[in-house]
Image 1 (cartoon, rainbow, N blue to C red):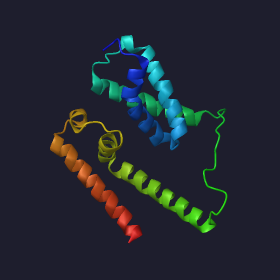
Image 2: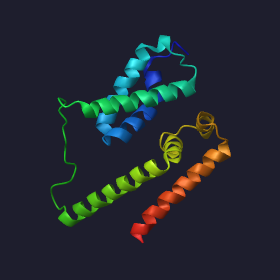
Image 3: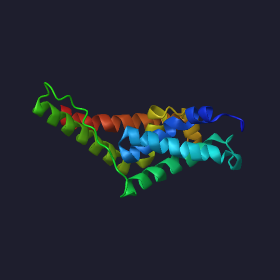
Image 4: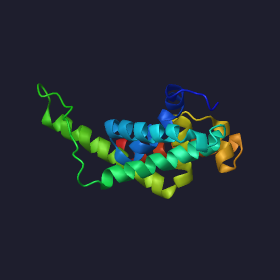
Length: 168
């Protein structure tokens, strides 16, 4: 496995790195930059790593991506480019405001969920968003497959309840 190309290595781990970077940055473009930096550095030092141990690689890439994303935020000299993605023509101001308010509410609920149930949040993100197998996540957290599925079910139910409070 040590003879895999950078492209194979990148394609294997990019979702994980990008997902955790996005969790910190809330910007897909910046998350792409962070994940490319992290994965390039990991690939260049792969001879010193046991890349056959996927659990260790997932944990290492997760931690490196989050730290790199935090460094990205801390850089005061960085120039960040923001582009308005709203269409200029025929956009109702009230509609834009409501979309923004809904998005902010969703972030608030997810932040509260992450704070109140950090393990369930991590498990839900890894299995449903990053598409890591239930078996791998169960092994990482020392749970059974049914234990992981139960935590996912409870997390979904909690999120549905929170959203139902506002939208009903």
